[in-house]
Image (cartoon, rainbow, N blue to C red; front, side, top):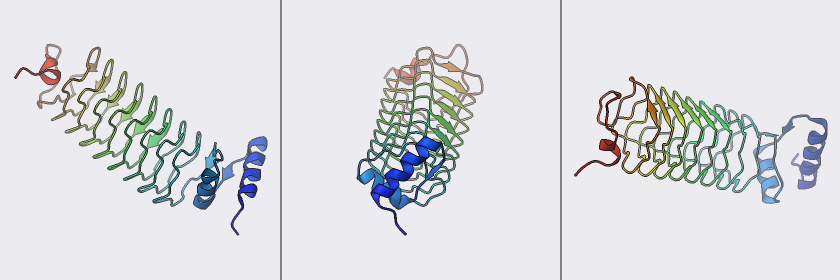
Amino acid sequence: MSRTIDDLILSRDKARKSGDTWSLTAKDAFMMNRFGQRLDYADLSGLDMNYITLRGAKLPHADLSGCSLINADFQGADLSYANMTDANLNGAVLQGSNLSFALLENCELIKSNLSEANLTQAGLYHVDSKDANLSGANLELAIVFDASLIKADFTGANLERTTFSDTFLYSCNFSNASLYGAIFHNTNLFKVNLMGANLRGAKFDRRTIMPNGSLWSEDMDLTQFTDPIE
């Protein structure tokens, strides 16, 4: 039996007072968001929510682990501190969303739209983000580990003090991005576009493959990638 909006608000408020888990269905979440209600700490784990529209939803600390969210629309949503472990977000729209401190582990983000998203201090572990759009996104202090981001677009993104470790960035576009103080450990940057990027203070190790296919060395002139002479 479906619950009314009043039933849902009552169950949410009871859960908040008691500290219990607040479980919802996809239909519940859609209804709550439609009526402008917050979904803090909601348990949506394991649900099939392909193509759902939750634009502007307030989902801080929500549990979306194991969800199927293919082509879901979270534009402008607040997903800060959300648990998105094992979620499938292929083709999802997360444009302008707040994913700060979110956990994205074993996520699929192929062809997802994360442009202008806030991923400050987010954890991206073992993610597959081939062809994802992260242009203008803020990934300051984020950690990207054992990830595949082939051909992802980071144009104009803020990647200051972001850590990339054991990550495949083949043919990504970092043009005009700020990589100030970024850290690269055992990362593949082959054919990456760094035109106009800020690499001041960036740190590389000797296992990192640079855009020209060579391994990084201390005497390497990085301006050959950021400001090449015609």
